[in-house]
Image (cartoon, rainbow, N blue to C red; front, side):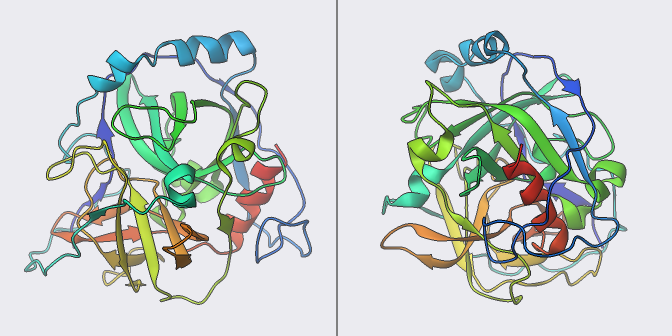
Length: 325
C-alpha cells in the first residue's frame, strides 16, 4: 500500500476570514437528481456546515484580489507534500501500468461552462482545485472534493472562489465566492477518504445566480458502479499547466487496496484536478452528463489511476442541505 496523494496544487492567493456555524438541516434529496426530497435519511448522515462570507463587502474584498496579473502568476507546486492528507497507508512497490492520457477538451458545450477552477487558502498556504456546477433548487451549488474545502478534521478553507469556464487566465463568466460550505461528517471528523466530497453554495454575482449564468449538470446518487465516466479538471503539474480544461474517460473500478469505497479510472491528470467532476451518461456533442463523483486522490505508487468517492446516500444528503442553503 502507499500514501494517498491529493490532486491539489499551490498558487499565490491572499488570505481571508471565515466564521464557523453549525450544520444545516433539510429534507432528503430524491436519489435521481435535484428534485424535492422523497425519502428518509439514514442515521449518521450528518453534514458539517460553515459560513464563508456574510456581506457583500466581504465578497468584494475577496474578488478584488483576483486580478488577471495575479492569476497569470499562479504557479503549481509539486504534488508531494503540498497538502498533507490525514491518513497514510503502508508502502508497497508495484509496477506502474500505462495511463489513459488526459486530453484537452476542445468541443465546447455545457461542460466547458460548468467546470472551473477553485482558488483557496488552507492553513495559510494557497491552493488551486477544480469543481463543477450542478442544477439545484437555489441555483448556487458547486461540487468539489472535500479537501478543497476543509482539511479533514482541520480548518475550513479561506478565500474560496470559483471561476467557471476558466481558460488561460480568463474569467469569461466572472467569479463566484463561497457563502456556505458543506462536507460529510466522516470527512469533517476524521478525514475519511471515502467521503472526500464537498458542496458549496456560492453567492450570486452581478445579481445573477450561478446556474443562470452558466447552466448546470445533473447529479445522481446510488447509481450502479462501473459505468463509463468522463473525468474533467484543470491539472497543473507537468505535463499540464492548469490553464485549460482536460479530461480522461474510462470504466471505473474499485479500490484494489480496499482502503476506501471509491472508484478509480485510468487517468494521468495531475495536481490541480482535485474536485473536478466525473460525468456519467456523458454526451460529447452537448457537453452534458450526470455528475456521479469528483476527483479525489492517487496512490503514490500508481500515478496512472485517479480515484473518486461513490455518490451514495451520504452524498445525497449533502446535496439536499447545500441546495437549500
